[in-house]
Every structure is written in structure tokens, then in C-alpha cells.
Amino acid sequence: MNTVFQNYALFPHMSVADNIGFGLLMQGRPAAERKETVARMLRLVRMEAMADRRPTAISGGQQQRVALARALAPQPRVLLLDEPLSALDLKLRKEMQSELKRLQTETGITFVFVTHDQEEALTMSDRIAVMSEGRILQTGAPEEIYNRPADRFVADFIGDTNFLEAQIAEVTGRAATVRLPGGASVAANLPEGASPSSGSHVTVVIRPEHARLADGAGVLRGTVEKSVFFGTDTNVHLRLTDGSTFVLRRQNATAGTPPPEPGQEVGLALGEGALQVLRN
Amino acid sequence: MAMQDLSSTARPDGAAPDTPASAVEDSATAERHGWKWLLCAPALTILVLAASGPLLIVLVYSFLTPASFGGVIWEFSTEAWFRVFFSRDIFDPEDVRLNHAHLAIFWRSISLALQTTVICAILGFPTAWFIATRPQHTRAFWLFLITIPFWTNLLIRTFAIQEVIRNQGLINTTLIRLGVIDSPIQMMFTDFAILVGMAYVFLPLMVLPLYAAMDKLDIRLVEAGYDLYASRWQVLRRIILPLVKPGFIAGSILVFIPSIGAFVTPRVLGGGRNLMLGNLIELQFGQGRNWPLGAALAITMLVLVVGALIFYIRYVGREDDGGRRT
Image 1 (cartoon, rainbow over the protein chains, first blue to last red):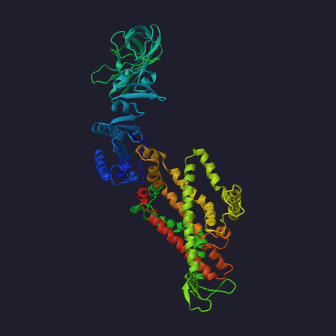
Image 2: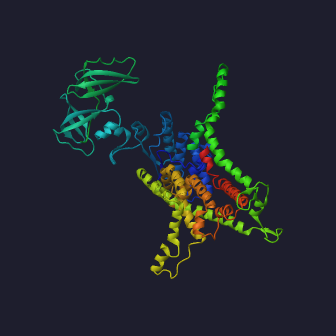
Image 3: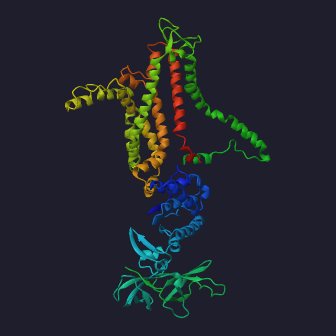
């Protein structure tokens, strides 16, 4: 296993090529093989022209690539990337994200990518492990983590979420029927390994884009407080009948219905299977 | 890196904007700049009076004739310079041979100064590393301990060393009492004694610049080294040593220069038998009453030191510059 460090930790007294070749040199690989591998790594990260520069004489993004090449050169089975993009500005960050994706596919090495950026985690990973205070709270594919968070921390950490206090009405296998604040009963998914008893109080979550304004009464009712437009979507902030807040996201379409006015009372419909019960 | 910061903040001289409209302003700027050097006057005065001036006097004196009871007669002579390297027979002034006594002293001075520098480097490196790896808030305390010897007079510290290594001193009496040796080991009045004394006195001058260099060393580079399969020895040799080399160079210069001219330590611990350059020079100005020879020897020492520094910086300090400058 090799590591890409948060601040790259490139050796300032060695050239880019020597930095990349350091691991191979330490492993005692023959000179010809080292030279060949370093050249290949330089090509891989597109830094051939910079081989003789010092790390202090190249930009942050280039340092990042060199750090990657250095860690990849000894051909580890697992590459640990410790928040490798946190020091880069947004544009460079996006570039390096796709670059990393490309490198990962090309080399076929397992990348363990540590990040605090949830969007980065969702877009870059095949599998995500959400950690808090040294413990893994949930692992799974990005869709699973996003749509079916098992834990309040996970739900809150990744994306925007509505939290609702509800009561379990009935448990049937992996699903349950819960009674929502307004009194309506709807189906909700249960987290893995949890089997709450009927009548117990639980928290259920739903993503803002999984709820919509109902034509009729809906399963939840609330008063519109404000609508916030931001390009592709509009967020409608509501206060539910039990006093809790709820955010609903609507995609903006040219011929869509206009967003509701503040003060208007509306009903909400929830997407099929969009409700998720949290572990306590 | 510090170098980089300096170069990026450096601006071309007289940074007045070069537009036609500012012609008047330009001359005003030039005038202001013209007098600006006066601000350096205090520093220049000190440099001339305290550094260049005395040096010039020493140089002039080395070409004069000694007066009988010290001082000089204002009469040009190269005899002093001749005597630096050659000696004349007392009875036959034409019988000239190399001054082996002087050459031996030159050699001993250089050799002892080099050995002192090496000893200080070997002892100073772990010491500085120890301090640099302590938690930030305790480092000031350790540095403080390093500077404590400076509070005591050099002579007293040197006599303290004498107490430790003399024949009836701490080491010998302890060893005899323990039955390790029968008769005391002669340590006083040897080159070894001079070395111990100088290494002790000059060690802080090596530790402090080394510490400064290590303080800047990013410990994550060491981590990165281990991550890339380097052994402890390889991390030391290929990462730590190259990166703290500026500290080594600064420390070596700081130790080498006072070592080569030291005269208190060789006088007390060398017992006047093992002269070093400093003692020889002192001798000429004192008992020898040959000021021009003393002056010529002083200049010789200066040339030796500068020569050694140029050699050192050119051949030891060369490779590491590139990374810092760019």
C-alpha cells in the first residue's frame, strides 16, 4: 500500500523524476527498470515536460500529479489518498477528480479516497464508508448511502435531508408502515439490522427532491414560508402542522406550475419508497 | 521556502511608473532615492570603523618594522611576511629554511578546528533532533538549557573542564577508585584536551542552526519516506540529512571560525605546549614584541579561514542550492 498525502509531502530536494523513482529506489529495483517505470508514470500523469523540475517550481495541481505518480510507481495493490484535493481550488479540483477517475480505471488499483466533501465522495466512489469518530457508520454504493441513510449522521452529512418524527405502525420484513405527524400512514424502508417494535417512536428521513406538492390532500400538510430559486431547482420551505420544517425541491421547467406563494397551505406527496427509517 | 518569498517580494530599483506625465515626479523620486543611502550611514560607519578599518590597520602593520619594545617603526618591510613561512638562522641570517614550527601550528589549528567541527556535528545532530521533535511548548525550555553555558565566562568553563580531565580530576580519580586503571591517564596538555574543551564550548553554535533547519523540516516528508519503503537509515541519509544541510553548513562555519583562532582553550588545556594560531598571534603581540609578524599571522589566518569557507561552500553546499533557489 502507498499513500498520497494531504499536502503531497514531495521531497523538495529532489527533482520530479527522483521523487517518483524514490519508492523504486528504496525497494532496490534495478536502474533500468526504475528509469522505465518513472517515464511511464510521468506519461500517465502527463508531466513528462516537468521531469527535471523541483517540486517547489511547479503548481499545486502538478504537485498533486507528481504525488500520485510517486505513490503509484511501486505498483501498490491499494492506494490511500488522504484528502488529496483539499488544497486545490474548485476548478482544479474538478479536473483532478476526473483525472483520478481516469488513473484508477487505467491502473486498476484500488483507491481508498479520504474526503470531507460529500459531493466528491458521491461522484468519485464505487463504494462509500461514512465514518464518524473513528467508527464506520454505513458502507454501500453512493446511491444506497444517499437514498437509504441508516443513521442521522449519515443522512445529515450527505446531501440535504428532511427529518420527521414518526411512529412505527407495523413492521413487515425489511419495510414498515409509519404514522407521520399529520396522522397519515405510509410505507418506509427499515435500516439494515434494525427491527423496531410497533408503536415505538422513530425518525424518518426523506430527500427534498423525493417529495412533491400533492394535487389533493397529500400525506403531509404545511404552510409555505418561502421559495428559493437557484437555477435548475427551486426550494420550497414549509412549516408542517406539527411545527417542524420541511424543504421540498422542484425542478424548474419552462411550462411548469409557478411555485406556491408564501402563506399558502399545501399538501405533500412523498415518492414511492423514499422514506427511510433511521437507526436510533 | 524563504528564498522564494524574498525573490517574489523583491522589486526593481526605483519603482516609479514610467509614464510621460510623471517626468517631474520621476526626478523628485530620483532625488529622494539619491539621499536614501544616507539611511544606511550608521551601518556603514560601524562597518568601516569596526570591520574594514581595523583590518586595514592590521594589513598595514604587517608591512612595517617591529620596534624593540612592541609597537612599530614606520618603515616598510616584508620581513614579517617572510618570517611567517621561513626562519633565519640566528648567527647566519642568510641561512634560510622553512619555518616548520609555524607550519606545524597552521596544520594543528586547521586539523583541530576541523575535528572540533566534526565532533560538534556528530554530537549536535541528535541534540538538535531531540529538541526539534519535542512538543512545541517545551522546545523553548530545551533551547534555554543549550544557552545556559553562555552565561558563564569562557575561562571559568575551561577551568571546569580542566577539573574534570586533569590527573587528579574527576575522571581519573573515579577510574582509579573503581580499579579500572592504576595510574592516571594523561589527558591535560594534549590535543585531546583542547578538542574536548573546544567541542564543549562551541557545541551550541552547531546545535542552534541545526535546530533551526530541523524546525522547518516537514515531518510528513519522513512519513512519506517510510511510506515509500525507505529504512530508518535511508530516511536519515536521503531525506533528513539533505534537508537540514543548510543548518550543517551554517553550524560548521560558526564552529570552524572561532575554533581555528581559539586561544583561551589551547592555552589552558593545551598548557602552552600545543600552540594554535590564536596563541601564536597573541605571543607575537605579547612576549614576542613583534607586532608586524603578529599582524602577518593574523592576515594569514584570515586567508586560511576564507579559503576554507570558499572550499566548503563550493564543494559541500553546492548541490542543495538548486531546490531552494528555484
